[in-house]
Length: 176
Image 1 (cartoon, helix red, strand yellow):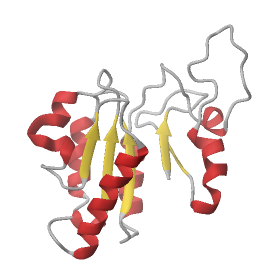
Image 2 (spheres, rainbow, N blue to C red; image 1 turned 90 degrees about the vertical axis):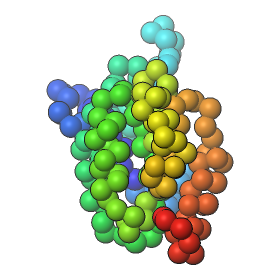
Image 3 (tube, helix red, strand yellow; image 1 turned 180 degrees about the horizontal axis):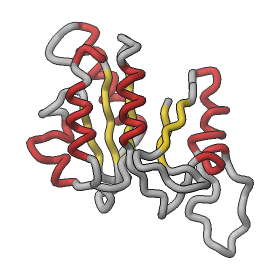
């Protein structure tokens, strides 16, 4: 699993910073406690601060933590070259910068990489018109790419989309 953003301390790097972590079913709860939560994000200045999570100690989080995802994209594409197992990639965008570059890189990984990309971000932070053009957000342009531009997507719908796609890939029917 890769997480990307800007470092919590020091100057931001031009392509952002990517942190590779490992998660499996037996360590999911521990991983979520370390990386999937930002306990101080969204807390007011006068509210009690909780101890920083591992995510907060490594990456800047909060409203002003916009990042350039190029470094993470390169690392994910490199990791995908090492596997043939259908892989779910959840890629969060926080600004419209680099959207076209990301989409072209996903396309260029090729269908044989067996990766399903779920791109998401709030509609005010990414260009919804870009992702809905030609049905791109529904997999009509690239069958292995879906995009959501709102906060209403759920893990159930995400896993359902991935399962449907991976069954198609494993059965050899249609384009992966």
